[in-house]
Length: 114
Figure 1: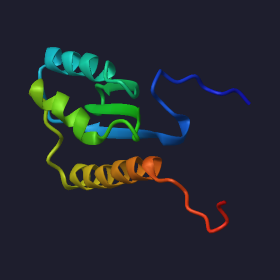
Figure 2: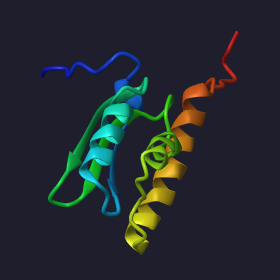
Figure 3: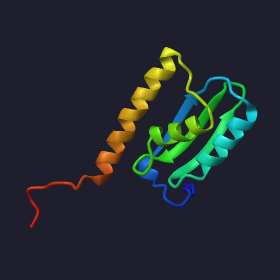
């Protein structure tokens, strides 16, 4: 079994995949946002699916969250889709990202510690 190499700052254990549908925007804004998102420390990959008008992301959730990606998107004038399914997925992504971040910081407890 081969192990996939990840970018610097990305741990396999904390890697999450996200699919965000976005509202219609100029192609140059999308390209600029994708380029800037791709440079964020902890981002493993980012791609734009033109057919579904969707951003496909993979990042280390112990270092990044969906909010970090959304900040970059708003600076380039991009918005997430306003559909209920996208809003539902976004809230779920926020919850899972925070959970991964909290679990990465947590020290395991045991009554058998010396």
